[in-house]
Image 1 (cartoon, rainbow, N blue to C red):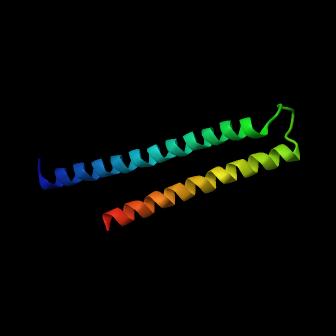
Image 2: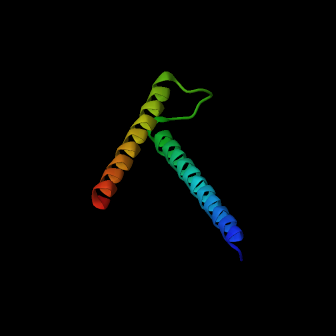
Image 3: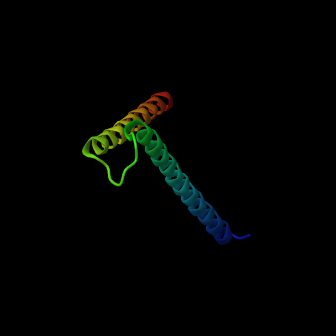
Length: 87
């Protein structure tokens, strides 16, 4: 295999790895959204109806906001720890 073919193969491998990383991140976001839905639904919805009342809507919004805040806090903390340990 010549240098050109190896370079082309390496580029294809890098593109595949990037694609897989993006797809993995998408799957993680979808899993987190699913978790938010389940937990917040169980917490906020007493009985399903044809539409959400304002109390339930506010509860769902606050619930998801807190999960997002917590996820960001944990992610940032891990990033700080990794940076501290690698530097």
